[in-house]
Image 1 (cartoon, rainbow, N blue to C red):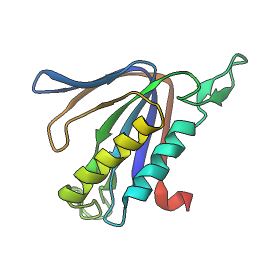
Image 2: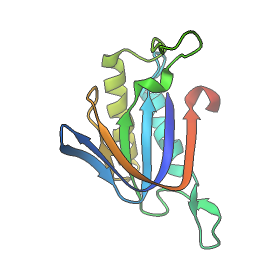
Image 3: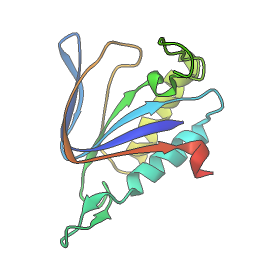
Length: 149
């Protein structure tokens, strides 16, 4: 599983003009699922993100988690995180999980964040989404479950 985590003051997701998810201060998470990922992978990544200390404390040091600040998450499925651009100019996405598996694990990931007490807004899997955000910092971190092992 791969995630791009952006610290935001706000983020929204619209599909065909309909608001499908939003968050105030917290994270926008773009989530990519790989074929070898499991529900346990989703839960581990959710726990890592919930505890990620990238919000400022009273001294201005990045020392607080999204849980510490009472923030939320906007979770967006993003198979393009597994784009292979090593040959040619058109990316290949064969390293991404098949849609059925990715949809299930995207749901598991968002549910795991909720189980940790975080409010979670979502995009709509497999749809053209319009994401609007105000990046805070900016702070953007890439997490890869293979790299965490």
